[in-house]
Image (tube, rainbow, N blue to C red; front, side):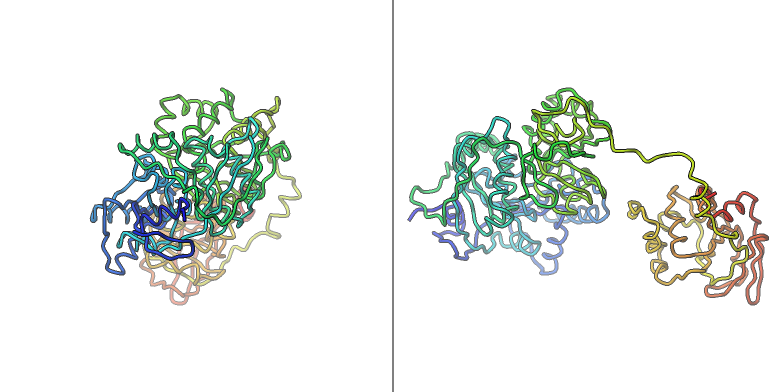
Length: 602
């Protein structure tokens, strides 16, 4: 009996014929780990005392957060670099782009190859007739050490695209149509082979777009039979010939599914579910805040060209942010040579370095709460690309929406650009509101509380409130991070209680201008800060926030943590059992702001 594509590839790499449902050891031609998960792969190998079997077939790809803008990613990348240096494992560092694209571009994989990665979209390799699979850290570590993994041979469905799509339909619209047809689990556990005129017409970029979303339908992989164009592309990338791989005419399939794409029009997936797909025209006019062009699904040069053509020299609508991230450095360089980078920047878009960007919580492409984004990515799960709404669409629809300021088709961009969302009204706060925020009857000028002696000079704002928490905007959430980066005081927030007073040394609060380094104390209920001196910006920030600051050097007074002190703000006189001290008195400005409860409350 004949074999399907996946049965042929797995059989060739298992050394014998295989049948669906059978579990076999599969030799893996190329094994990768990303900056997301790569450090865990290393830890698994080191913990088990295992070495890499074939470093020349093994590599790290830094594509999730190429800039290392997150400390977790930066640490993982460094750990992987060190391991690569020590073992000879390959490394595609922060300038190179998305790993699944690189192994195709560089000719490492082609028709009939096997590939595994810590990327759930490793099945993109189905675009060129190769077997790719995303796996967990332990699986990948085993593949690195043994050069093979066990795998259960899946059943194969033949999926026929019937009809001719409309003139505006793209590869992204085709795969959204498939997602709409199969839902989130309609291909669960299957390999799918795509056939039909619409499938055969796809070039490399279109095949990558469609193959990249197999995971969103539960599929193991979606295959295209390599045609002459694919073989030529792979030959050029690798400098060698690849087999003209195809399923046997008498192969046995688990079923045949026909998906009608006749007259297909541009589609879009509503937020939260890639399979919740509707025609763009049904939601046209929905206000958008941002647009993301890129990802492993739509970051090829063809995608950038299509978006640039829609922009056509126009600018992104006022109030809309457009972010463009090419898939690889090769794509980036080609876009630069063709003038696309200049066109995007002139349109008002931000162009980032190659990588996954917002799809993998990267440094470019995420959105914030309430933000409405049109994205060319493959997933729009809640929280996947940020905390706002994410609509999935083609590069053409994304570019049209960026220009219009609302969701729009490329052939139906409104003549009048949508205005930005209503701005926050500015001006003086109503007197009644100000009065409501002003403490009734003034604030106490005599404070009593427990003392914490933080006996250090030059405690900077990163020690007080580390920059990894700067995205926190709710003051109520800031207290938990107080002194979180000060050695020996990391648990301060858990031990502090309202009414405490902090005493410290010289130049407290030096460093940045971040207000959070003041607000975190207010959140904890700290009554006052006493220091031998304060950083200039910090002093202003604290005074303006209404947090009492007293300049006093208490190093030689015998005051200890836990002592109860009384502080008179009118005189800066401190007393405690067995001692007293006097600091610099409040200025009239400081006292006035303190009594008002802050600079902006009166």
